[in-house]
View 1: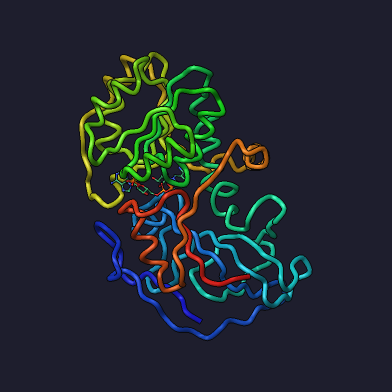
View 2: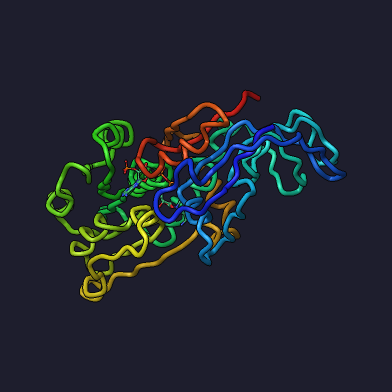
Length: 331
Ligand code: NDP
């Protein structure tokens, strides 16, 4: 039974120096608990924040203890009334091949809604993030221009599609030509920009002839600096992520205040947890669009428990299209 522990806090990019695979005995479930065999682990950019000791909206990971995150697992032993052996569940669990967990912290997956992995992607945290950030903060209207950064990732690719469903002119920014082709050909995104090979400012001007009404920002940094000057009157910015800064201590850049004043724009940071009371609404819409074929999704699946760290590091290199997952075992 292997576990992946945080052994040192990264100052810049996380690497193998910071994580260690440790062997431990398989745990025994107590009354009210189940033994969960890990099937899929989600790796997510926010985990980088929890590797730091800095105060945030969620507690730091402890040193010399397992990292944790969203997982899909199978109940292999039950000492609880609510879950049975063979049930496929999702929840927040440590990076351990087997975990004894309280049954009431886990949710049985409704497998009629889609493959079990969707509960970590389009029908899980990233999907809900895209839905609430765009619908609640972005307030998309037909004919408006929506720019989304990190457009080919788990959140961004969902935002781009909900933007199309809402009738927006959607412009996606991502880091490879393969990702641009995916956005254009599979998701019908109107205009795409490769921020690694193109001048983002001049390409945005071309792609947004009517200016920018909504900016769904997953990355921050230089890309956002190029967006601000093009904001329209009463533009809305959903500040979802800032991955360009996560590994850059004391990151600084141009000022945005004048652009916000000139455009009377509204910028709002959020975490998906702010919408906990409305998860059912978001989930219902996402599941319905998925069933109707209005929404699709991509997954990048790395195989093997020992490769969880590399899959996580890959998020900062852009190796994933859509949701990055790690497959540990078959149900
Ligand atoms: P993604 O699937 O989008 O994976 C991360 C992507 O970020 C990479 O594929 C890469 O794509 C891009 N990236 C990495 N480094 C940089 C960089 N320096 N500059 C620009 N782009 C970079 O992850 P998620 O969809 O899970 O998350 C997207 C963002 O949303 C993250 O910032 C995350 O922290 C945030 N988030 C916020 C939530 C909230 O509640 N507020 C909830 C979930 C996510 P590319 O090849 O295009 O560079």
